Amino acid sequence: MDSIPANRRLWNKISGDYQHEHDPRIGAAPRLWGMYSIPDTHLRALGDVVGKRVLELGCGAGQWSRALAAEGADVVGFDLAETQLAAASAAMGASRYRLVQGAADQLPFATGSFDLVFCDFGGLSWAPPHLAVPQAARVLRPGGRLVFNVASPWFEACYDEPAGRVTTTLRQDYFGLAAIAEGDGATSYQLTYGDWVRVLRGAGLVIDDLIEPRPDPGSLNGYNETDPPDWAHRWPAELLWVTHKPEVPHAER
Ligand SMILES: C[S@@+](CC[C@H](N)C(=O)[O-])C[C@H]1O[C@@H](n2cnc3c(N)ncnc32)[C@H](O)[C@@H]1O
Image (cartoon, rainbow, N blue to C red; front, side, top):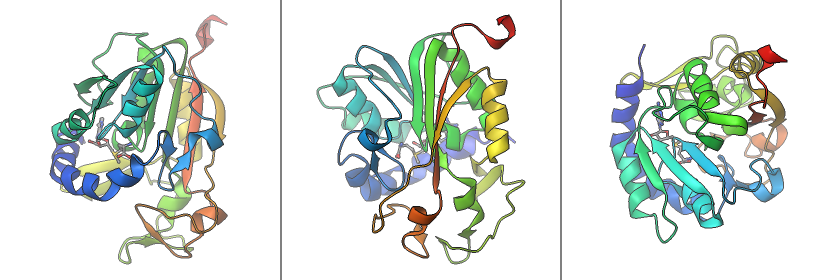
């Protein structure tokens, strides 16, 4: 089912509350990954962006895009929801970057337009990966990188819906996690490890690393309660995929 209209409605509706609650933390410093705000200086996922053409898929209020533009990247912040883009525009500051509205599953950019495509719980969590990953691969130049952070299947499978928190009990089946109902037709997406590998390789990408960000004990999860509180120190809550598009496509090697 096409989740684009419902996801747009959801994010337009919740953007104000979401930014009120999360912006201070997401934007507290440049390059903070995920639910535990782990600095990229620790994870080393994104690399140098100076002078690079960068696309953030599902940029929200643009905390990441703003930081990379300030470093000297030529950034496009891309998002489905106009209220999220309005928040990004309002917070843009001195380092200007372009904002474009659309869906990660239907990218309105020419083939080979970007050196780096990335997101942090953005378009690759909120658009069907079997559509969005090939789109991301298409708009990358040969040698360009796709780097993105999503929830891990462990985290999703242990989510206790009625209690509204993640526990140590498996609640959801691992197989078949694919589409997660977020209410009123809105949908987020989750793949098994094997399906991520197949979707990435199927789009012609090379997997360079799978970083499993590990917060220190006592780190706060800004989004979900967990039981025990150090859940993500003990099990992987997130998957940070580091991939690139080969200079020569697989079929030609
Ligand atoms: C959890 S936010 C992530 C943004 C930012 N990294 C953050 O942490 O706030 C998810 C974003 O994805 C956007 N989104 C939802 N569906 C999308 C789609 N199909 N294509 C592109 N963006 C989408 C939402 O509007 C929202 O801004």
